[in-house]
Image 1 (tube, rainbow over the protein chains, first blue to last red):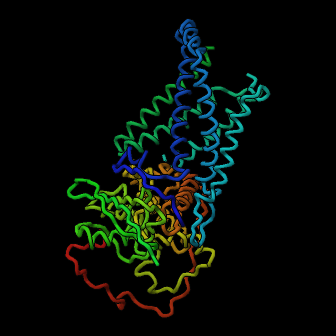
Image 2: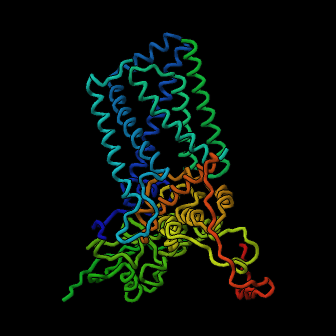
Image 3: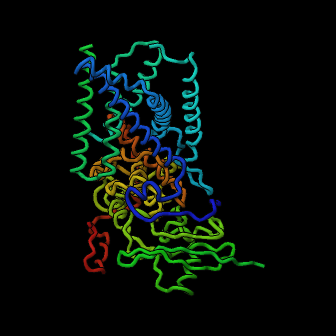
Length: 149
Length: 86
Length: 276
């Protein structure tokens, strides 16, 4: 089995630095990192959204002020970020639900070199899920698919 | 509570969030409080898991999980109050 | 005619906690492994270089180290498959370094021991004394055979991103061993191992990054074992786990009493303790 050639700039160290930079990782590891990042983005949105709605409990004028803020142009950018984050997190989450229950990763077998491990077996699931996420993002641009509330 | 059971409930909440959010985007009326409950549960469970990995240990776990539980419950309460009031 | 090229070996040296990188120029011929390179360095350039190796054929698991960012066995990794200019060698991650490229695997071994990596049955006394062989079908064997291939090299432990942060996570090797025994039809120890798992961070800290499977030099697929273990633990928590039938035993060829059974010899190493 040949591996990529070329020197790497590998940093020594432990903990967070090693976790982030410390190896040439496979795609599933970076997908995991992105899943965490998008989860944080979504949670941040949810918290902000709840607090925004709850500002009405304080006073309608506070709510009006905050809602006025959401009309600024950079918020539109954040909303796109939210869309990408949601699409990725949702479909990767579906993949993780399947895979973490042992579906799609193959049955235990007698390993024969070159090994086709569970990471390769579930790769089609990952690809399909990412395509579905892309489909969601693209379809959201068309008026036909906008939600009706 | 069994950790595996808690993880399973979080996964159920994740699937529930996705289903409800998907339905919310359609013409169906979805109970906003229910959607918030599953989303907050899954979200703060995930945050708690992540933070306990960055800060492992029993004391840190108690503090982190306590904070997540408090924040999650507090936000849910806000949702309920907002929904009741308006 | 075989031509040799010279490549640069950058090796992490660690003596008394002082880390430095040292560069060596090593003549390389096709087929030469990283282990051959290290042996050349030790023989010709710097005899103080320390690392572990033994079988030099990918079965003992001693020579695990990080080679150009990817953990692997030095004896199984051909230099020219990786690079024709630079090889960077570091000790395995997530373990304390003893010296240079040799790390202490004690954390992995103690976690492995804690998860009871042996057949647990209700049979009293010495197993197999008053009963015959277990009966196990090839299908039953296949449910755990893959996980028996583990050579405890520590490479998956080094690759695991969760272990980089959380020392209290059991890790791929102990968890694979736990699943190997749980799935074995001869074993009855699911409940004991579930109890033993409580002392570690839960399996919910495994997020299927699958780095362990990717790095494993023996095709053990620890990620698959961990997901199957997780599934059985969740099923058990929901009281949905079907207790698999324990393998039937054939009757003993002859009955032997415990008294006539030879006792193990005394330990020759002072302080050795079977129960540690």
